[in-house]
Image (cartoon, rainbow, N blue to C red; front, top):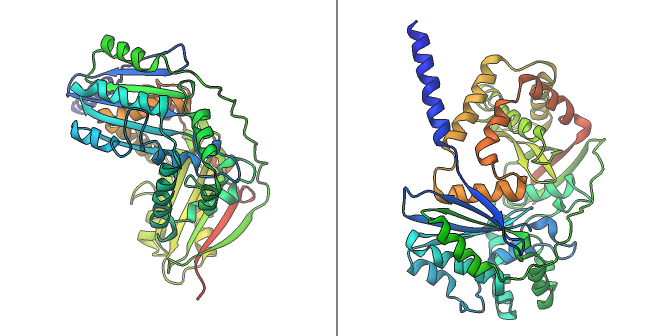
Length: 437
């Protein structure tokens, strides 16, 4: 009886937490096509204003890669009303913080201010959208910044170009073929007018989502949004008809070299469904089962018990059009790729043949419940999540409902996904080796 009482109390407690996690929001469109999402939370005097543009590395043209990431830097240069070099000064002098990030599918800019400066954040992002200064001086300056970033993060970083090698071999037709940072040769060759045209094409209200989250007065915020964004003219947004890759039907093995490493890395990668399909969620859960923590299957076997690997991981990279499911392993001592591959394949075979135990399944569910409870713990995080779910998933309310997708995944779903996507004839194998002396 006591056990039942404790269990019921725990269920009630979790119900309270789940209810507290509900993120209330309002969304609507301006006549110029700008999508607006508002989230009011008056518990702390801060406001995040973010704009997510539906443009990422996949929207670039072959021979002109790296533009979306380049604009992540370039659009801090200044605007018609914000002088060059003043952006960060304005933010910091008003108690704020700001940043931006880019991936294959979208670009996101945001400012977080004390709530008495909400209007300032709205104005600054409208300035970026309305009339950013795309000048030769700005382009030349940011070229050097991006080159240095590439040197630090990729070219001079151990394993820095590993994922780029995976992308360019896993995709041959789709523009996921190239990395987000792109090619420096492409950026060097581009003319000023090409950067100006890229801005006109993608940084328009009907290709953007504006999110305002935090200590706001909704009625006043709507008035400011209309004032600052309502008169920005919409652009012509072309449909995203990217070429599709043919299914992988034969295993492909490639070798690449890195002068910055001493220990080889072995990667096995599979092309999987985009993030709006249920199987994408199943594969994320599957990857967590395999390598989510020190008690996970692969870590416990290859690192902890058998000492065959220094590091091992399985991860599901979720993108809009496709996903990338990959295994990564650093061998211990003289352990060969064949040995590591054999052990990983054996675990895949188990997943394809048998259901995971009920105990492991409940452990997975608990992990994802815990992630859900701990997610969106800041206004800045909530703003980013609202924008991401809207732009990349087409459903803003996934911020509240995504956990239900994971709750609905069964052990049979996990087995079926392993059988459907993780077969030897559907993969590439990358041998990422120290450069020969």
